[in-house]
Length: 586
Picture 1 (cartoon, rainbow, N blue to C red):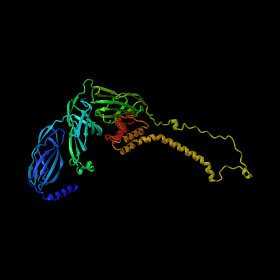
Picture 2 (tube, helix red, strand yellow):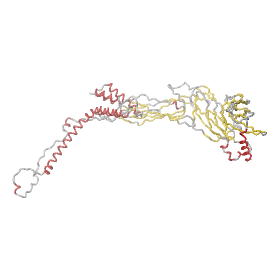
Picture 3 (tube, rainbow, N blue to C red):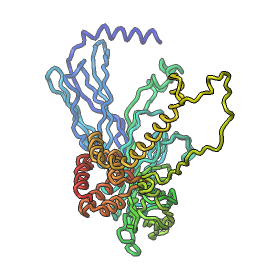
């Protein structure tokens, strides 16, 4: 058997150069005359009497079909001693609508001469309820978790592909529906299932379906395209029936398309009764939680309020909650963060919102609850959620430590203890003399020894040096604030030159040091309101103090919102305000 196959192949290869082009004919055939929507029909164009064509065939009557080329193959026939060559073209066509269609003719050109085939009739019926059968090794089903829903209520749309043959290159085409969105939930699942008593390999994929308008929808069929592998050769025993060739590598693949059945969905509007003002359209099931940390701060420091909204539904509709204005509290909102957490049960996720709260004055404050409105489709009514109420204790800020000048009596040394005169209370043992010449009367004077003079004068010089150093130190302490005040503006301008525009931290540090140095203060915390009040009390106009307050407000807002740079902040504006302050200070 093997020798015969090899001999025939060699013979055809040797005779191929001598094959002519006489009696060229074209024919068209299909593997069935009746089909339903979603079926894939194999169509072949046979060109006999030619080894090649000038171009692929042109086939009429395929406007309502999706066409996939299946390749071409050459053949050589020996009939009654005559050698005849041919070419076969394979196409796979999938109907997009029902009806009776005339397929063909197919036209080809061989050496510039045109040839055409006859036509074939194909009847396509609407897809009935799909059931598995031996002739249909593929089945695609589509289901909805509910046939009635509210606007933007999520419905699960599940597709299941049943297989009894090997397939690859599976692609999905979802229905294109106006005002309906599909969002895939997780990755496709593969498992074995039983349908009508038969075991199938199942590929399942689930989508969250949201309808955006109120009306009756007809959801068109979904379509899956794939390559299906069939065994080569006839059904009888042959060369390729050996188990070695049972591997898919030795199978031929053909493209196949399969469609699901259409579905109906009734979408109704949200009820007008009980609808909250400014409702965002949030539909589903949600919860709210909040936390304030820390609950006790000092004036000028910030606490953070965190609100977390979690649940299932159209989470993109969760609104940005608004904090009401609070007396003596400044509020800075952070950028909200949405974290989706979709699973096989549907759309889900969490939205986290944060605010930095800064108290300007000490006292006990109450952070009111925030509210969230949503529509519960299971209960068919609107619900309102409230976060917890949080107490905030604000302690006095760290004190304004001023450099206290010494009193007049302290400046003159009044705080020193008075010196007491040295009084002689007695004499020590008289010196012993060993010669009569030392008993004579003489004045006291050193014997010329430099060492003796050094010993005697060292305490005097030490006392004088210590006294002078203490006086100079006290004078420098008293004059230090004045020196720092004179250099404050110069130091501020130098620091601003090193700060780039928008550098919030650098500008705030430079301003704080300038006000401390210029006014002789030591402020542990410095709010915008405090800075303006201090400058006003020193004679600065309300307009200039207001400019400084606005600048500090802008910088504080950026810092508490977690921003290190704000392009709107200009490093040149700070020295301008400082020069105005210098001109107006008393």
